[in-house]
Image (cartoon, rainbow, N blue to C red; front, side, top):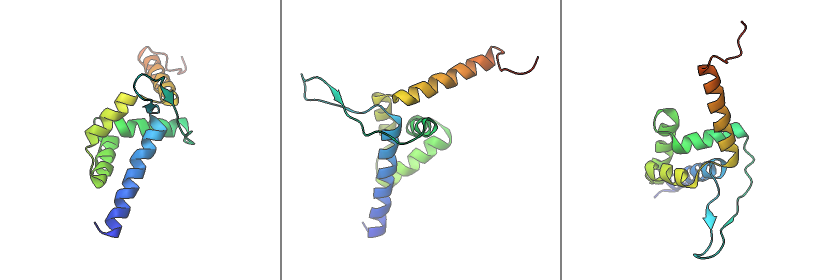
Length: 118
């Protein structure tokens, strides 16, 4: 692999790793039979950026899925394995909140509670 190709692969791997840090629960790390301790480097991403990271990791269609496929292709990793790992870990607390807020707004609009003038 050339130096340029290696640099591209390292960048792509860093993009995917950052998406996991921003969008997912930390990986549980403990030997079998030991209590699980969750360690996580705090993400400096905003809630919106964390939600975008989650969408990048889990989308099944559209631009986020295409972006994940492209970055994973550069790294040489199956994008569906990346998606499966993100789903296994689950969304971070911030992402879960953002998803719940989005769902509430959507339900409010569907129920006619869009907040428009009457």
